[in-house]
Image 1 (cartoon, each protein chain N blue to C red):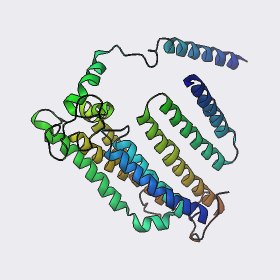
Image 2: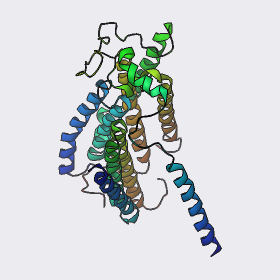
Image 3: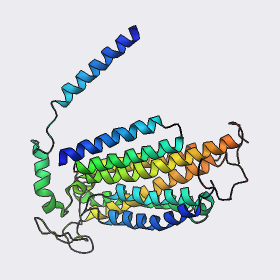
Image 4: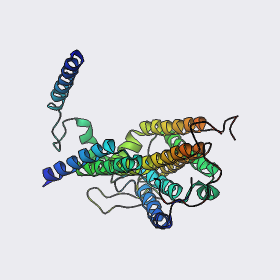
Length: 87
Length: 91
Length: 165
C-alpha cells in the first residue's frame, strides 16, 4: 500500500515537472510548477515529515506561485507598453 | 562526437557516485544508532515539558541555529528592500 | 496590477480568512502539533499573497502599510533575542519558564497525553516571536517586489481584467 502510494506520487511529480518545462504558455507552466510543489509536499507527508510538508506547501505552492504570477503580469505590462524602455 | 562521448562518460561517473552513496544510506524507518537522538526522544518531554520533540530541538536544544535562521530571513528582507527601493530617477 | 474577475475575488475573500486562522493555529500550537513559527508564518503570509493577486495592489496597500509589517518583524526579532538573553542565568536560550507554573509553565505528564496548551515555557514564546517575524518578513518581501514592478506599470490601470492571457 505504502509502496504503491510512493510510486504513484513520484510518477505524478515527474509528469508535473515535465509539463512545467513543456508548456509554451507561461501561466500554465507556473500552475504546473505549483502542482509539482503540492505533490512534493504530499511525498514529504508520506515520508513522515509533516513539518517540511507544511513549509513546502505554504512556500512552494503559495508564495512562489504568487511571486511568479506578479512577475508574469509585470512582463505583460512591459510588453504592452512597448519594449523594455523605462518611462 | 567527442563532446557526446565526454557527456556520456560524465553521466556515468555521476550516476556511479550517486549509486555508491545511496546504497550505503541508512534504511528508512529503522532505529538510528546515534546515542544523541535516543537521549532527545527519552528526555525531552521531561526536561522541557513539550510534546513535540522537533520543536524542543529547534527552539531549545538548538536555539542558536534558529537565531541564525532568523538573521538570514532578516538579511533577505533587507536586501530585497535595498534592491527595490525608490530610485533617484524613477518616481 | 489590476484586480481579477469577480469569481476569483469572491473565492479568495472566502479562503484567505481560513488561511489566516490556520496559520495562527499552527503558530500557537507549535509545541503540540507539527509545525511551528516558520511554517505558520509562511501560511499567514500566503494570505497576503492571495489578496495581492486577486484584489490588485491598490486595495491591499490601502490598508496594509509596509511600516506595519516592518514593525511586526522588528518586534518578533526583538522578543526572540530578549527571550534568549533572559535565560542567561543558566545558559543562553535556557528554558527558564518550563514547569514553573503560571501562564507558560504547566507541568506535562510523562508519556502519551492529550496535550496542554499553556505548557512549554519559552518555546511557546519563541514560536510566537518567530511567527511574527516570518509574517512580517515574507509579506514585506512580497509588497516591496510588487511596488518595484509598478515602476513599469502604465497609468491607465484600475479597471478589472479577466485573466492573464
